[in-house]
Image 1: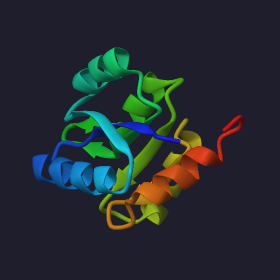
Image 2: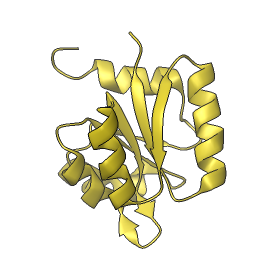
Image 3: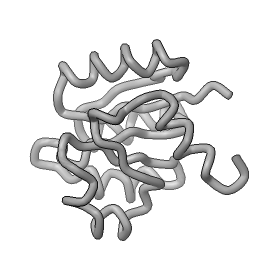
Image 4: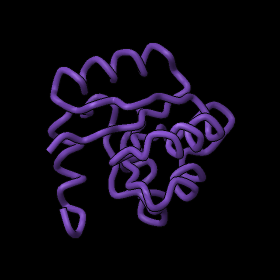
Length: 118
């Protein structure tokens, strides 16, 4: 199954590196965005299977974006440990968390495949 992803991060270098990594591992990066407005616009245009959203989008909250992206499944990402955000992740609509170091096509597929009906 080919997954179409939306990458949302305020760091251009990370966006480029993550896009390259995920595409080499068989995912399709359908679009990228660096803020909430851009992400909502791209999600509406592209209808991605999953969105990978940085917890800290500069002055904006990735958790707020996760709520607004529903029903698109969201995986929260960060350079910080998931333990730092455990309560916030549990209270969010996100389907999971990946540290940026652990980001991989197989990790994204694993979280998405755990969704009901997948």
